[in-house]
Length: 154
Length: 127
Image 1 (spheres, chains in turn orange, blue):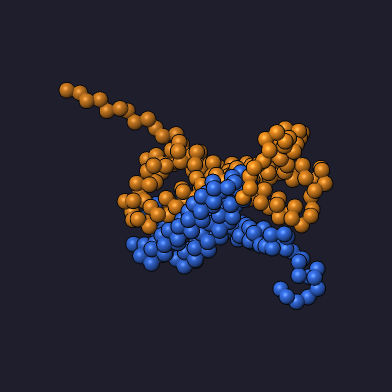
Image 2 (cartoon, rainbow over the protein chains, first blue to last red):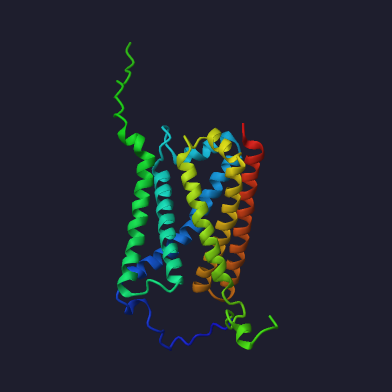
């Protein structure tokens, strides 16, 4: 537990001395997305499950917080939904990258770089595909016809 | 642990005498999470809607409730180990102990709450 570090001593070379590469970015993304899902994601998941267990009214009140009348997500629903799915796919892909690295493979500079970039390409692609699929019906639906505003006449 | 050659006894154990336990558990739960989370996402996307009746009917089936409970155990154990490493990296002394305690309480309480919710829906939810 001794933490008495002499402040006059230099720290070992850290973030600022390295040339940035995608492997550093995905390593940080892995931690950020993991921490985000472990906190925000866990709370949303618990609220959703708890509301479902709480009964119909409770669940509808919860879903109202995240959706508009038609059932489509509202702003909060989109931010949480897209944020958490993108986080999940990124964490999943960098997690798979860790599995590969654990075997001792893909440490060659080029392969490592390509694999790091690939995790981000795949996570964004999967997120777009998922939300495209979810929104497909609304995207191809004909535009809602404007119903004339009812004017009260005397 | 008392048998074998001296190299055999220390293999896999670092100076902490714990070796690769944490790392291995994290990888095991990662593999389980991968399968279970993909199952959950595909299941939810394939449901006709996410309204109360549809979801409780779905979760009343053992084929949904059992994987959901397994998912909660695996995900919250993985979550606890992941945040533990983050705390170990950035916090020290008293703050580390306090945060580690809170993390353990949160992970266990959250998992128990989630499992209870699943069981309540599974046993009583099908309306």
